[in-house]
Image 1 (cartoon, rainbow, N blue to C red):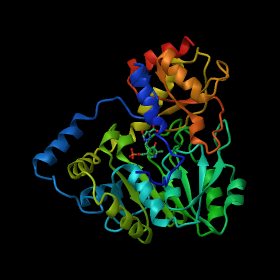
Image 2: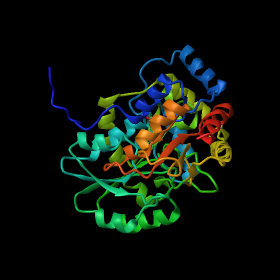
Image 3: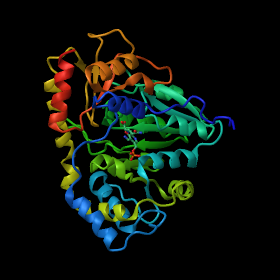
Length: 380
Ligand code: PMP
Ligand code: GLN
């Protein structure tokens, strides 16, 4: 049987490709973003508790009330905006599902969606599945800042959605208060909505504060704000995320969500709700990762790689132009196969495959893993 592909240009994701290559060649895997730290035993005990207590059937469609309450409370404390847990918060199966549901809820055939490149790979295919048209704006290399004049010029009557991701995967850039001011001055005159992917909200460095769209009423009123517990609690495999949105947007979001997954993992949702009462676990995360970033940077300081600024996320970009002229895809493969360190080439996150000779390394790894990787990188 042959079917006409709805996504003819989509192949296997780079994260799968590079993780597989790392496995095949027993390389240190700094490619796909996932922590190798143990999950808190307390959190695991909570999941077990809720499983044993019989919380094993479907959660309510919006997520268990205790978790929605805890998310509302955290959002209020950090960003000073109250979302109604009954109508404005939806728990999803990872941020990936939330991104899919938000895009699908609003994008119709022919609608334009502005995205910034390099862009995380989960946006464009969903825009296309809905008949939308991605409009690409490049973040300015090497510090990956937004040129707001370009945004102003790219907005048209057809612009339905603008997708932001801060802290930004793959570059580690973060939106500043100046960016927010520029966005406010532009978007007020449009009907565009915002999808804000904030899965790394608790990982910002050097005093940079996370600029959540939920902080700003005039932006929050048109935003889907998406986050994920996987990044915060070293539990990327548990796949629980959520979306904050004003009720008119959340209503349409939930129409998609209820037929995509309907609900997510009940005992894990209860466990997170209880675990979130310990605020230190997320409030200390920035410092935890800043130390790892600095450790990684100090260890590769004598290598021929050149580090780009990293203000958030658990990814560090390294420029290898002093080492090789190969394309970033070729070089990252050779680095994995011949030198035993897997990374992610950045060109794959561009529509036109721009190659700035930069690779992404995940530093959410134990000291020993980073030390072994750095030793190899310093020999190149
Ligand atoms: N957005 C970004 C920017 C990500 O990096 C990731 C995962 N690494 C996701 C969304 C997806 O999150 P989840 O695993 O919770 O689906
Ligand atoms: N988001 C993770 C990363 O950036 C990977 C998730 C995935 O494998 N799709 O590495």
